[in-house]
Image (cartoon, rainbow, N blue to C red; front, side, top):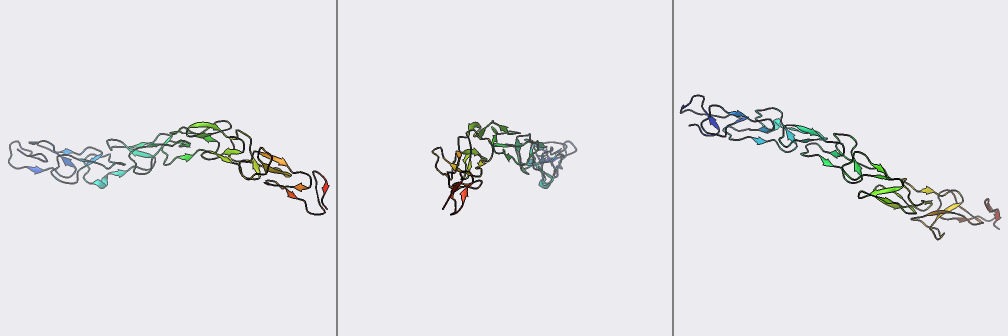
Length: 237
């Protein structure tokens, strides 16, 4: 009787032949060898089983005899559990080339289309709960860890959190824009106390008589001798 991994076409024949590469035989006394199924390969003779293609690789043909016949899944796809096909990732998921599974996008990231090879950051002022195909605007708030959080005075919607306004700018509460507003000519950035500030500024305050400020200023400057500030018409001697 022929052992596993071999066969004989004639029953009872004392002569056995080896299963060739790409085939196998797991039982004794067989008259033929079986082809390796798609998704598997066998590169040696007398095999009793076939090996799976590596994770991220597939083979669509039966009887594969070399590992190199298993092909790598392209970006945006992942190998099926039986290694027979590369499966397209759904929107909200991604996969790099040679991936064994599609991975969901993280919080505040998204993949709009099926077959994506990477996730993108949500635009400032929007966010997502993860595994998302789009980002949602919370209406004056910022998504952080999946929650909508309103930006307080002096802050704007950054890419991951509410961030402080810089000097020369200001922002009211609930700013969903990815920027703060520049102070107009004749005004400077200030805190709630009215003092000049360079970070987290909540207001733009008018310069007092005899001082001036260009657009986006964090402080007012004294007019030079012999000049006046137009708003107040106070001459400096």
